[in-house]
Length: 509
Image (cartoon, rainbow, N blue to C red; front, side, top):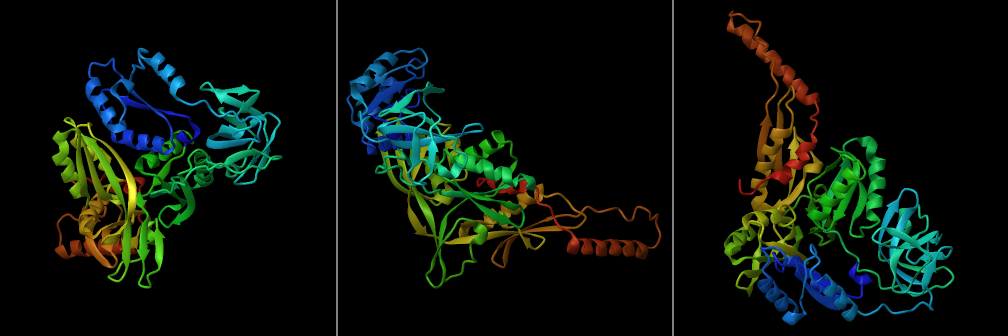
C-alpha cells in the first residue's frame, strides 16, 4: 500500500546479513509499481559487515553497477547525506495537479476516541482544506473536513494538503464501515473517476477468536472493527461454537499476521481471548461435483472415496548458507514439499525453491527453519494454486461429545500421528473429575487414538479394618456405580490450554 503512494524506493540491505528472501519480494513489488530503485547497504560500521559479498549479491539481484550502491551507517550518519542527495537527484517530483478536482488515495487509517476514524491519504490531484465537503467514492459517505495535516512523524496540522502531499484528514467519522483502505477521496461538488486503488488481498489462514469471558463479546466485536480500519487483509465474521460460545471466524495473511492481531487485542484493548487451531481454506467437491470453500474444519463433511478435496500450495523461497542445504531438504520432505530449483547466488549464499502445502508451512515451519540453520536462513512464499490431496477431518471427542473447536483437517498419512499426540497433550491439560474422561481422535466414525484421564477416587476402604472381603467388594461396586452415574450426567470443562495444545505438537518427538 505504501509503495502505491511513493515516487521511488530505497532498497535497504543489512551488510551483516546480505540479501534475504524478503529483499527479493519487496524489490519485485517496487518494480511492479514502476518505481526507481536506489540500492543501499546499511550497518557498514559493524565489524561483522561483509561489504564486498553483500555488494555482489545486490549487483546480482538488481543488475546495477557496484558504484551505484550507497554505503551508509544509520547509527553514526556515514553516507546519509549522500543518500539524501541521490534521492533528490533520481526520484521524480510529484506531478503538480492543484488546479483540477481533488483525488486522494487512502493508504492507511487509524482510530481516535475523540476524533473518530482518521484516513491517511496521498493527494494525487487537486487540494483539500478545513471546511471542504468530501465524499468517499466506494461508500458514498459525505463528511465535513475539520482538520488536515502532515506527519513529522507526529501529526501536525496545516492549512492545506495539495497534489504530491502525504498527510491525514480529520472528518469526525464515527462509523468505521464508512472508510476503506484503497478508496478514493473526492470533493462532493466535483465527482471524479476513482483511482486504481489496491488489488483485493484474500486471507489465507483462518482461526476462531472467542472471548474468555462471554460478557466481552461486544468489546471484542468493536476491537476487531477498529483493527480492520488499517488492515485491509484482515477479515472477521460472527460464528458460534458449542464449546466456546459466540465469537468470530477471523482471516489472516499468515501466522505472523494472526499473532500480531492477537497480541494487539490483548495489549491495546485489554482482551483475554481463546484462539482455535489455525487452518487454511480448502476446496471441497461433493459427489455431484459441486464446489464449496471450507475455512472451518468443523464444517468439512466426512470425506469418502467419491469426494475430492483441494488444498492451497505455496512457492517457498529460502536464502541460506550452503552448509544447511541437507537439513533444509529433510525438513521440507517431512512437510510434503517438492524441490523446484537450487541456485548459487554466491559461494556463501544459496537460493532454494520448493512447492509445499500451505497447511504444512503456516504452523512452525519458519521456527524450525531458523533452528536448523542457526538463524542464518530467511524465507518468503507466494500462493501458487490449489491441488488435490488425500485429506481427512480429524475430530476430537471428549466423553463421546465432539469438540468442534478442536477439529482439524490433516493429511491421511499424518492423521494417526497427529491424533495420538493431540490426545496425549489434552490428557495433560484437562483436569481430573470424579469420573473417568475418555479423549478420542476420530476420522468419521473410526477412532484412531485414545487417552484416558483417570477419575479422582476416594478411598472408600479406609474405614474397613480387616473383615470379610465381600464387604470391601460391595463398597467398591457401590463407588463404581456412582462414577457411572456421574459420567452420564457430568460435563467436562475444556480449559484454555487445551486449544493451544495442538500448536505445541513437535513433529520430531
